[in-house]
Every structure is written in structure tokens, then in C-alpha cells.
Image 1 (spheres, helix red, strand yellow):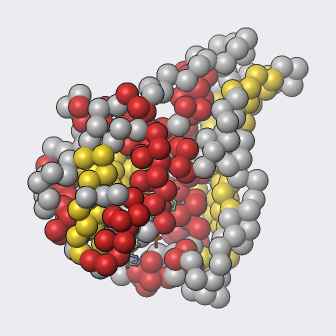
Image 2 (cartoon, rainbow, N blue to C red):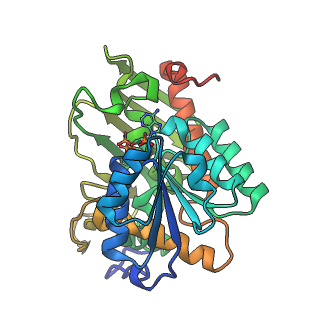
Amino acid sequence: MAFPTSLPVPRTPDSMEAPALRWGILGPGWIAEQFVESLQAHTRQQVVAVGSRSADRAQDFADRYGIETAVGGYDQLVGLDDVDIIYVATPHKNHLEHAVMSMDAGKHVLIEKPIALNAAQAREIAAKAEETGVFCAEALWTLFQPKWDVLRQVLADGGLGTVKSVYADYGEYFADDHRILDPGLAGGPLLDLGTYPIAYVTSLLGPANQVAAVGQPDPRGVNGQLAATMTHAEGAMSVIATTVYGWTRNEIKIVGTEGVLTVEALHNSPGPISVTSADRGTTLTHDEPFGDQVAGLHYQATEAARRIAAGETQTPIRTLVSSIVSMEAMDAIRREIGITFEAAGLVE
Ligand SMILES: NC(=O)c1ccc[n+]([C@@H]2O[C@H](COP(=O)([O-])OP(=O)(O)OC[C@H]3O[C@@H](n4cnc5c(N)ncnc54)[C@H](OP(=O)(O)O)[C@@H]3O)[C@@H](O)[C@H]2O)c1
């Protein structure tokens, strides 16, 4: 184990080279727009159909993005013969139903984050994927970007020594009418924003053992902000925080015995990472240009396309077990604070 002399280059393949899948978009909302723009700008993937609860909204989306087929009804979308994979982009509380509906129709699925509302639902999705034999993954897009491949290589090479702790936060400001403030849609920052820090700490350190968490309710009926400290195997610890009240640092720090790796803000978007030696004498930087969703969402789609072409049903970048482990940590945080999603119909 030694601090590196240079950083590895990302091994992420060119998205233009991935075999083309025929995509169906389920839920034509905000993230679906970014996703389709990203596919159309950076890949050869074909977006061939879109399904909405409203035929007019489906047609409007199809017209804007030059999509051949628009249907009013998600069941019609998943039943289309010329669709290979469904991108589930509805609110979190609908992910289980829409993922299962798609897989039952024999379609591969890429499910927006969080994969579901809790670990029990995530396990149901994994069981359906196993039963139907289709490809299934959570669209935790950060993990698919080139900088994250650099990070994985630094860790695998022992460049940070033994990883002792991970610090990650995610805060954003939201206007009153945003769905994150709607208790009926399982609002609050944890599932929407906190998903990222939780995915980072659990994929870097493994499942949470002890969990200590505090939070503050918001008068609009959701949790407004929370923080959690967790312990993990082999003496590691993590600290996460998330809020709907404003933009926080939105960085990740991975602290090892030989050095500290920083994923600069916004940690979930394309952007640089740096690695500083424990004595702070040397800093190495991976200069990925800053970018937005359109610049970064395509990597998860082309990873799915390559895995499917190879006959695989999951991606090692975000296995279903890793999604379940994330949901287990979020369940534990919610239990500590007393956050429920009863208003969204979740019975636990
Ligand atoms: N990866 C990322 O960076 C990122 C960013 C934002 C959001 N997301 C995730 O993507 C999902 C959707 O978020 P979004 O911001 O795109 O939401 P959004 O703009 O509200 O879009 C959600 C879409 O789902 C459909 N829908 C179905 N049932 C619904 C219901 N009960 N209430 C509202 N809409 C319903 C609606 O389409 P129709 O009614 O027309 O069918 C709507 O357009 C969430 O799980 C979120 O966590 C990911």
C-alpha cells in the first residue's frame, strides 16, 4: 500500500461505441427529459417510445424529442414489442409497481434512484429480476461516470491505504411546489438526495452496523433535514447529511491512512477528483470537466446496453444487492428519527 505517483485513467468505454438498445420511457417528467437529451447527445441508443398516464403528455414529450411512439398508459408502453428496455422515471413510490410491470412484460429495466421506498421493496424488485431473467439496475448515475472508475482504481490499488472514514452530504434548495416536499410522494431529502451519500458510504465501506441519526421535521409534512453517523466493518465510520433547505458543500471526502480523496461538488455530476497524501505534501488531480445530467446520465444507459448484449442481468457497478444494502441503511436512519412514508401508502 503506497500513495500513488499518478492517478489511473478511467477505463469507461466510449458511450458512442455501445450496442444500441430500443428504449421506452415510463414517466415523462423532469429527469426523463435530461436522460433522453443525454442519450441523444452522447450515444447511439434509440428512444423509440414514451408512456404517460396522459396520452397528450406522452405525445408532447414524443414531439419534443422525435420519439416514434407515444402511448397513454404505462401498461401499453411495457407491452410494445419493439421496446427492449424500460427506463422507470416515475416518483419513488411508483418504482416497485412500474419495475415489476416492466419485468413481467419481459422488458429489461433501468430504475431511477432510489430503487424503491425501502429494503423490502428493493428485495421484491430483485426477486422479480431473478424470476424473469431480465437485466435490472438502479440508475445511480454517479457510479457510472469516468471519475468514479478512477476512484475505484485508486482504492483497489491501495492508494489511500486503509479507508477509515467517508464524509458526504447533499443539500439543495427547492421551491414549495417541488415533489420533494410532498408527503404523498414520500418526500423529504433522504430518498431523493440522501440516496447519493448513502450509496457512496455503503459501496465504499459496506453495510452500516450501528446507526445514530437525528432529523428535523418540516411543517409541509416531510422530514426537512437529517444527519447520520454510521459504523461499518473493520473500524470504518461514515458521516452523512442531507437537507431540502439549501445548497451545502455537496462533496465527498474518503479518508485513508495514506491519503484523502476528494470528489468535488457536485459529487453526483461529472467533475474533478483529487487525492492528497496524508502529510498534505502531494496532491494529484483527475481533471474531468464539470458537467450536468445531460453530460453524465448516458454512462449508466450504455453500461446497461453492454451488459445486456453480453447476456448479463446486472452490472457490477450497481448490483441489486448494493441497492438493497443502501435501502437497509436508509430504513435504519428512518427508524432512528421516526420518519415514515405512510402518507405515500407504505405500510411497514
Ligand atoms: N438521477 C437524477 O439526477 C435524478 C434527478 C431527479 C429525479 N430523479 C429521480 O427520478 C424520479 C422522478 O423524478 P422527477 O424529478 O423527474 O419527477 P417529475 O418531474 O415529477 O416526473 C415524474 C413523472 O412520473 C409520472 N407520474 C406517475 N405517477 C405520478 C404521481 N403519482 N405523481 C407525479 N408524477 C407521477 C408523471 O408523468 P405522467 O403523469 O405524464 O405519466 C411525471 O411526469 C424520482 O424517483 C427521482 O428520485 C433522479
